[in-house]
Length: 367
Image (tube, rainbow, N blue to C red; front, side, top):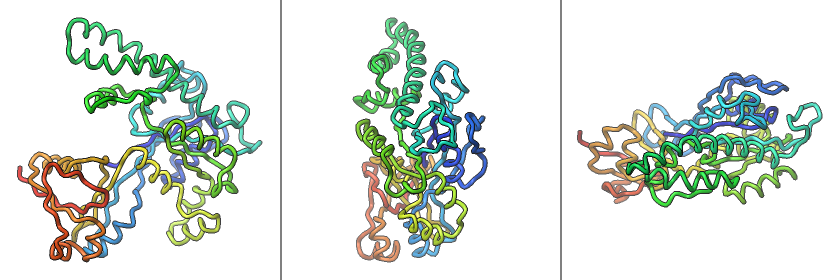
């Protein structure tokens, strides 16, 4: 399933430069003026996972199929966007479709790059956009709740249930708090909250865009953002979009590694965003492996075996019989399925099995 992230931020914070670097494309124009991104650009990247390489070696697989991460580059928002300022609500609509928000914050000083607010203050900038998203949610919810309340009064059970979710969220927004601060009490409430597609219910990953000299250590701006993120329960990573753009020009992984090491870095920005994104969204990876391909699949933590099978194909979930599971460590230790089976490391698991990160799975089904 992978996951998709909407890249947002004020104009001229480095969003498009970062998008181009992360997706190794030049689809998004990067220029020193606001609103250079007119349509939301979409880029998909393979999620790097060294475990796939090892599985391919063991099973002599013809190919590797990594899971995918999708980035949506959304035009720069400005103060008043919820009321149509700048490019307005059409871009707020793009955010509703993503799993998480990557909020790029300018954490560097450069008099040659204009800041739309006139000065560099990433915490203020984060608050500006959060306010616009909350205002958009508030307006949307105030309109919707009237009709839902009427149906609830007439005895409609579904509307009554929806109202129990909408009312505390609306109260939070009216108090200046994002929708994500309201925690659903059960799975049903969580589904209803997700169905509302509220902008401020999305988890946020703050990306601090710094100058090259601060890429490894951060700076005073990034420290303030890190404190803000920790207080909110969100994730924060430090990246230099310019460095990422240079790394994207190097096709040899070893050259990339050497280049990063000269700057005191051990991982690309993409790798750090993926790690933070998986943690933020509670994602894990399981594998299928054989002569044809070594394949990675993304799942939510706590996914049951039948649902994991359904990620591969709906028929697998519908006709699920059982799963044959080998942990990645045992798969490598005993050089594949045969060795793991001979050493008693292949387990037969039923419908109640909770999949674990790194499981190598074979699903048996009958439709």
